Length: 433
Figure (cartoon, rainbow, N blue to C red):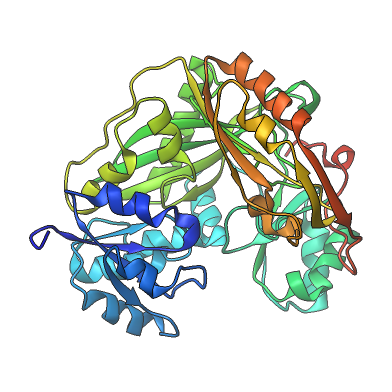
């Protein structure tokens, strides 16, 4: 193994299983685990069994870059948005294949990204920047300019953390005056109309495209559909291939190409969130990494191991990734979200029944009885995730409804103090923008 290249893997526990990452690296590279940029990492002793560990806890960015560079990695790899700028700085210092620092800034700053997309003429929602601790007069001006309803979210963040549906100016003012929201740089974004009425949807009108850009040329290797989100915008799972027809898929890929070009992406993986609207697909956001669950879902429908192929690309290997073979089967991960008023999980039953359903391969609990619950964690507030493969989208819809029917969950409920929280579903009807 001494002659294998060294890959700096910016790791936290939500990045996936240490063992699975280590196994994917076999015969490809030696893992250098970079930790300390996030508090969510296993003990150093655990990681040290599977490679070298570089801990940057408490370091300034420049110091952290020096520390990582000293480990002499031959490539960098991220599964999360948070370390993107740090990884880009390391890659620039060592001339490694990754997003450059300018692109990394656009991929992690929602206001800067949306400004660049608008400047390039890429259609998307209108938006307004809301700086942290803004004066009351400034907050009032923004509240008066916004076109409601809007989404309020952190300028830097992922997974719908602290993401609010705001129906009117009064609610916005109340949120911005609170300590949780008011102390962080936020962005307002109009809620776009969905192409299909929510009550007629089997699956959501929001989807994502995963791409690999090499020397400025993008290849799209996954178009992923989503189940209808939980209030206010929490993810409830995804599936490959999407439910789009050929014309919709073409339009979605064209919109993705326009966004990647506008952001000047040269080398690296991207995950683009889009929404279908009556006027066509609109780009919501571009992320600078592989989408969550994508390696698992592609593997379930017969793709080459994406994680290992991504490692090889980072190490200046092949310019692309092997596209999955054509398949009519549908791989899915279904996430079960608690109601927004849930404070603590009191009972969770039916998971064995879910695991026994035809098409379900395994179920992973994400919460146990007694755990605190907070909808503001976004997608991470889920109770469990079910994985599987079915024959088609009709079967997927039926199975998803059966999963929800079988689960028995009870909660301690709470009314948020000083926080208007999310609205009821009836208040969330999307409007045109």
